[in-house]
Amino acid sequence: MSEILDEESRKALVSYRIEQAQSTLQDAELLLANDRLNSAANRIYYACFYATEALLIKNAVRAATHAGVRQMFGLHFVQSGKVDTKWGRFLSQVESMREGADYDFFIHYDKEELLQILPKAKEYISILSQL
Image 1 (cartoon, rainbow, N blue to C red):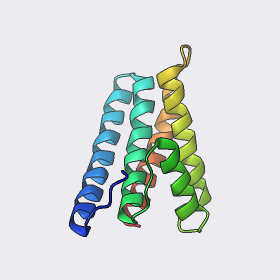
Image 2 (tube, rainbow, N blue to C red; image 1 turned 60 degrees about the horizontal axis):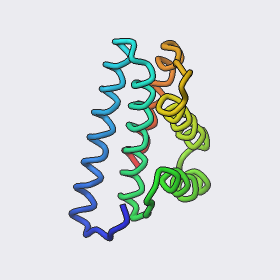
Image 3 (cartoon, rainbow, N blue to C red; image 1 turned 120 degrees about the vertical axis):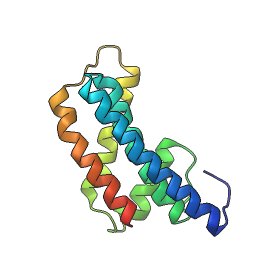
């Protein structure tokens, strides 16, 4: 998101991204319930990514790539102490899982592992939504 937005557009985009995060997390739950584990890992990451992007947009922090979103989140929210460092690590963890699910030929995620990550993703989205 590189263009400059007026306040009304910024609020609308933030709201849209939060809704998208919540909807995508619901998709992850459906995928988990149907043992589509790699796809669930992908959706968990994207749910967190959308929430992170919403936070950056809300605070007029610009980032054009996934790496940029992660970097700006770390710089403006984790390093500043606004967000606990565990959430910076969590975002990196779910991004790594998504990359494995999407690009590694022999990765098959464990359902129990994803079931443990899902509530953390919900908490992450909730925390970022309130900032």
